[in-house]
Image 1 (cartoon, helix red, strand yellow):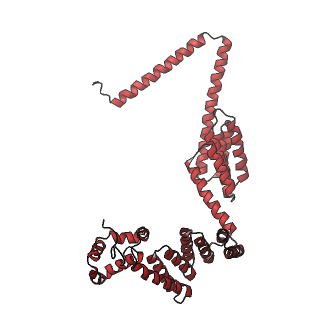
Image 2 (image 1 turned 180 degrees about the vertical axis):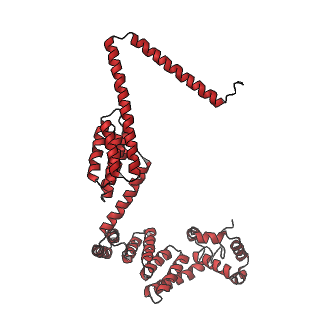
Image 3 (image 1 turned 30 degrees about the vertical axis):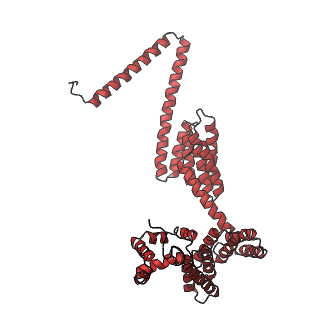
Length: 395
């Protein structure tokens, strides 16, 4: 390799400098050659252009310096001083919209919202006439105006202006802000819509529709009642009842759960939830619901009635032939699936399948007894017909 004692980086820097010097020399030579054929008038015009360009560059550099000073004041929250610096920059290079955008930010922070909007509108008009069009700066002007709307509490207006900013030049932070504002707007509209009296009126309309067997209309009216007064558990339970009539048991179950969450002592919600689970043959879930409801209101007539019906269904199912559909549904329950994956449970089921007398031994173990009872209630294990006392095929 070379023995000049220089590093590779030093040699690379020298080569780059040499190449740049050669390029400058070539440019100077080409310029001199071009000027050699010019008239005196053409040379004068060229010199004037160079002088104007140099003055513009010097003025731009001075304006940028004033802008940088303004940015320092802005960060220190000295907005009046920042505005003065930006004004100096604007006076020197009025066509540079960056200075006006910075001034708009400063006067906005100082509390002059109208002035901020006026300046941003001026920026948009000026920038659209420039070539190339500075799309990102137009977007920033719209974002500044959106911030004014947002501070004034006009969320819809802010969203509209932020969307205009995105149309000019997409930005991930602005996209996130739009999503946040849409969420805020939905929450505000929901809050503004609250009216307990109108909720009662909607509930009454729902009751009338339900009595007339117009269950779809009843659901719509109960939904309106919920929007008017979402913390009233009665409306959720009423809608759950109506949904059951149109076979929407999933939605009915969700509404019942919501009613219980709102008022954990509301017995009617427990009864509705238990009936849905009972209809779906999820007897283990229904029993849990009934027991929880009775723990809140042990004398509730409706819950006691549901419990009586449930116990009868459990007894009948225990000695009925296995129900594959019910077993499949039960296995979708994480609790039941977890019990069935337990090696000890699998062994107990195998023992029962070959020796029914093993039941007393298995049930004497409190932990295994609890698991087996859950499987029996879920319908995974039954004692009637082919496959009695079996939990399905071994894995």
